Length: 276
Length: 235
Ligand SMILES: Nc1ncnc2c1ncn2[C@@H]1O[C@H](COP(=O)(O)OP(=O)(O)OP(=O)(O)O)[C@@H](O)[C@H]1O
Ligand SMILES: [Mg+2]
View 1 (tube, rainbow over the protein chains, first blue to last red):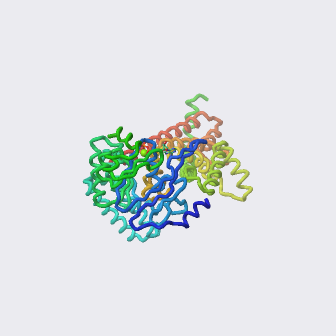
View 2 (tube, chains in turn green, yellow):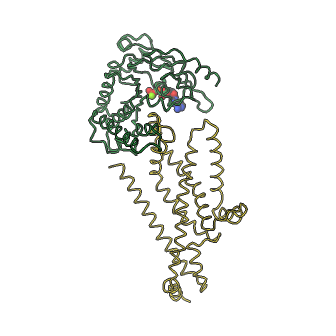
C-alpha cells in the first residue's frame, strides 16, 4: 500500500470549478481465481454544475464507474479527489463525503421499515444529532434538529406533490412515487453532486416522465449530476457532456449534439444505431 | 389402583391440599423465568454475534471476533444443554469460585445456549433483507452500524419472528432438564407429587397439559405480534 500513500501526498492542483477529479481509476472484481478488469485506468474531471450522461452497452462498467465515485465500490487503484481529499484512499472518512454525494438507485431502495417522512428525515437527523454530541446532545438541540429536518422534508414532499404521503410506508407507493421520494431523500442532505444509476429503468413506462421531469428540474437549478441512462432523448436534452463507455474505458466524450449526430468512434456509431 | 382412584388421589394433592400453588409459584414460574430471560439474553448475544458475522472483514479485529464467535457457536450447538448445565454448575463455577445458585446458573446457560442458535437465526434474517437497504443507508453517509441498527435489523427481526417463536418454545421445553442442577421447574414439582404415592401417571398428564396450554398461548402471542408488525407497514 506504500504506492497509495505516495499518491495522497501528491494531491494534484484542483481548480475551483472542478468538483470530482478522477485519476487512473481501475476496478477489478475477483471471481474465484479469475480477475475481471471492469474499469481500466479512467481519467476524468467533473466540473461544478455539469450534467454528465453515461451511456454504453450492458456490462461496459457504467454502474461500476458511478459507484466508484462515492466508493460504494472501492476502487482497486487510482484516485478520486472530492472536497480536497482522495476518497479512494481507504483511510479517508468516506461517510463524511457521502453526505455530500447523493445517490439514486435503479431499485429506489427506500427504507421499508420507515414511513416516507422518516425515510427523508433519518439521515439528516441522525448525522446532525451525531455532530451535536449524539446521545449526549441536549434535548432542545435534538428537538430543533428534528423540527428543521421535518420542515425540509415536508417542503421537499410538497415540491413533488406528495405531502399527503408523508406518513405512509413505501410498500403502498407506485414506482414513480418511490423514485421521486428517493430523489428528494438524497436532496435532503443538500448534496454537492447527485449520482443516478438508471433511475427510470425499473419503472412502468407511464411513470418514466414524472421522474425525468424532476431530474430535469434539478438540472435546471444547477445541480451537478452524473446519470447512467438508457434514455437517449433525455441524455440529449439535459446533458452537457455524454460519455460513451465501452469495455471499461470512456471511449468517447462529447457534447450531446456532437456525440449523437456525429459520433467519431465506430463503436459509438454501432451502439447508437442499435438504440436509436 | 385404577385410573379414577389415582386421579382423585392426585387431585387431592394438587387441588385440595394446595399443591397447585407450588406448581405455579415455583415450577411454572421458574420455567418461565429461565425461558424468558434465556431468550432475552440469547437475543442480545445472538444479535451481537450475527453483527460480527456480517461485519466487513478487512481488518484484523473483526476476523479475530469472528473466530471467537465460531468457537462459541460450535460449542453451544455441539453439546447438549444438560452437559452445559452440569459442566457449569458442578465443574466450572465451583472451580472459579462462583456461586450464583442453580436458578441463575440455568438462566445464564440457557441464555448462552440460545445465543448460539439465535445468532444463526439472526444472521439468516439479516441476509434475507435486500442489500439495497444497506446500500441506501451507506450512500446517505450513515455508517455500517447505524444502518444495521436502524434499517436492516428491524426488518430482519420482522422476518425471523416466527423462527424466534420456535426458539422460545424449544427453550420452554428444554427447561425440563434443569432439575439436573437442582433447580425446581414443572418436572421437579410434579415428580415430587408423584413421589408421595409412587403414582406418576396423573401428575405427568397434568404436567403435559400445562406445557401444551403454555405453548399454545405462546404460539398465539407470536402470531398476534407478527400481525401487528405487518400492519405497521401498510398503515
Ligand atoms: N460485485 C461484482 N462482482 C463481480 N462482478 C461484477 C460485480 N459488479 C459488476 N460486475 C461485473 O462488472 C462488469 C460491469 O458491470 P456494470 O454493472 O458496471 O455494467 P453496466 O455498464 O452498468 O451494465 P448494465 O447496463 O447492464 O447495467 C460486468 O461484467 C459485471 O458482471
Ligand atoms: Mg448498470
